Length: 565
Image (cartoon, one colour):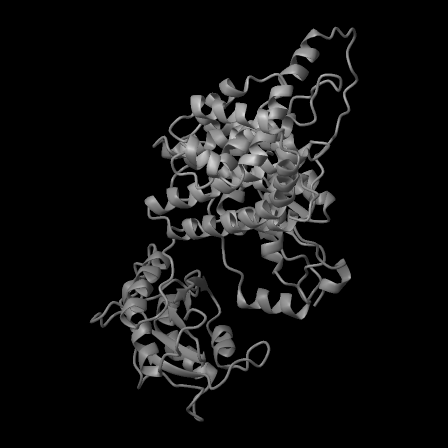
């Protein structure tokens, strides 16, 4: 059961919507199921003598009194509105049950506490099987305003109790860090235009993707504009600094042709200008000379940083962990953008799903996650996708997403845990799709039996407690190929196995040979490193500057003219 509290100032306009046909004639049999006084609340849906104006006057009775006291000025935002909807698949409640729901919510939120004769006037209108709209005017009979602090959270808590008592689907509790849900009007507009997401949702994903890739605030706005998004900044009156911003999707306009603007914080809490600045300091991604750089380095750096983030989640430092989760959310967008393989769609879906898991009521220490964030931005400029190393990175993301779900679950963050699990499923699907042919190729190229026996002995010496499980793992043949490649690259297999085996425990790994395979793949080529150190190069290499990172839109929208009303 989902309540959605908002405020406004148009009593009659909201009544006309509640009792009218709806924007798509979806309202059927609109009628009042509960009110402050059923005898005193004329029902335009059932009473032929009633009218919208009459009901508005009855509701606004105390508003009008207060207006006269204020010299003709109405109190601001004096309309309280709360649609309450059951979850898909729930049974339809009766009018009597909806009436009880409404009375409990106005009591819980402070609009009309039970037994309070001077409470605000309110009605609950049902015009569909699965939801009601509670509407109230927020001036009491004694002229005071109701105490509605944290009313949305209190409505949520009461709905959790109602779900249990009415045997409805139990939804996850929130912590006020979720982004705003698109309104019914926004959803209807998207449907009319053949869009699968609303303009608000589309803008949110573009903003996250761009913020993940750019290095500073100026680049953030520039890249957004390059994607066709309109940007409007708000400047401080004294300093002239940017103190806020709004975005508008291409072609998303009002009836008069004006853009529909969404403030950054209205897209998501961590897209406000202040939250962005916390994780977008002016930072440069190191430009490495072309003759020294290994194209695989960006992929190796982000893989190592994600392994480090996994360790932070286990550290008990919640602020640092939350900072790493925010940075991991950025990393997922950049990994998806840097990937050209068919599993890219799963990675994009994972990035979008993880957005709810990247923030909680715990304030993030973004400085603690600087290494992961810089590695993620470095990947934006990567020129190629280096085969097995890219899959090793995917493997690391799968395990960090699963660890994130457990971390949130342990702290009672139900919505975030669910989002992390969804991201995990997408990442796991992408990993399996990408890894299957690579494992098959590694197994096909396994070294001869004598070499495999030598590696078996290395396993038994370096990792004696895990040797039997490693050798029984179906990925063992592939691991022998990877060990042979590492040996060619200058590593001592036995020493390397001991090192990667100590990175994290192997007891919980269902397929330890698979885990070791990708940990070894992420190790640098020592012979290549030595060759680069020994090379002497005079002069400086010209830098190939990229003004702004290439950012691929998360989803495309139609041409501008098709989005007008």
